[in-house]
Image (cartoon, rainbow, N blue to C red):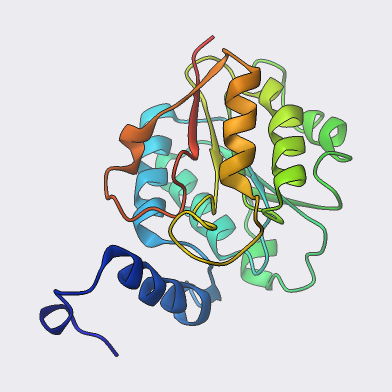
Amino acid sequence: MAVLEESLNLSVKEALALMQQRILHHTYYFGVQTFKNPLDFWVYQELLCELRPDVIIEIGNYYGGSTLALAHVCDQLNHGQVIGLDIIHSRIPDIVRQHARITLLEGDACVLLEQVERLFPPHANVLVIEDSSHTYDNTLQVLRAYQRLIKPGGYFIVEDSICHHGLDEGPNPGPYEAIETFIRETTDFVIERERENFLLTWNPKGFLKRVR
């Protein structure tokens, strides 16, 4: 195990690789495995406290650790619901399934869009987190489909744009390139890099704010 005072000569890229191993194999939230950089999740809770969204849509849940964490923040705010979408939810434990603020839908996110929209009123303030397959085509498809749910001032967070932009793994092209394509297509969203203020983010260019 690397320790800080003996690792001061590591490059940022080497540090990212060490963190990735911890995130993939040894990171848990309330006992549920959670593939999430905790520095990014700290920013998420700041956003939730600032925006108080009525609905958080998390696309890609896997074991559901981050889904549960989002619901717990909503508990503390006494506001909000979490809709979790994934192709398969068989890995998700009861502690996640039984939380009153969580609704799980199984299937392709873009196919489920109209079903998702029926779960909340049209005026709801929505925050979307895209964390599914990380391929370029799928990420771009989700961005194009789900952008309509976000009101001006709201956020669309695209995760794991670190693929081949900090970590040499994952799809290539991937989320980073999909974000760039999406931003070229629209003037409704801007990349808010100020949200990357811990520097070591798994979401470079991934905090998209709707401005109009």
